[in-house]
Image 1 (tube, one colour):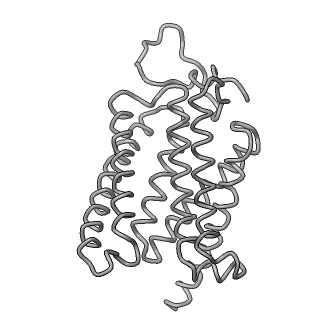
Image 2 (tube, helix red, strand yellow; image 1 turned 90 degrees about the vertical axis):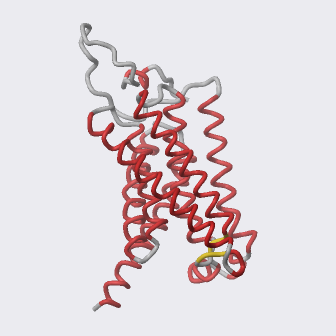
Image 3 (spheres, rainbow, N blue to C red; image 1 turned 45 degrees about the horizontal axis):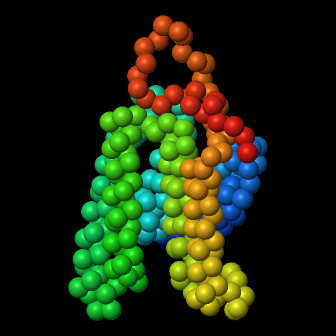
Length: 249
């Protein structure tokens, strides 16, 4: 029974991972805010949640939690602000700090281990992940203190977190040759070919971050609630109207 459950969870995990990689590539390559981007992005989020949960069930708790964290915070970034999103930012900050601590401890343990690896992960990668988690936690702290960023910085936050979640999914697959060999032909199992999707992912991420920070604006990413009445008091937080000022590419 246990082996059957493991096989089913593994099959779901592999299917979700493959779907997430394909849909993530689609969402990165099409016009942002368009119908294809929104629909593929929504299914991508669902696939990534399934991927993270099943990864934790299969023993990769750290990778699973990181995936869920980055996808969840990327999603709440482009949702209208509410008490729920503010509470979720507090929870996200706690998770990010906890994951950073685990990565730091793992990096120290890996550095003092033979080969300087821990469960096949080099100590450099663990310290790199810890740095990313601390940067993400700093962003969550700013969102709690001052509200979600406005305009382009808000979209940049959404973009890099979605891309890093995809990096975790792609990296967990392409980093291990045996996994790639089960799916792709022999020529695609070499180190350069396995590194190529990761490089393309980061290339696409930095390209869109450059577009976000550039002169041209990005489109609306979420639907908006009705605007506040004229006598509503300003809160200093990012509102949904920030997105209405952004033009389509």
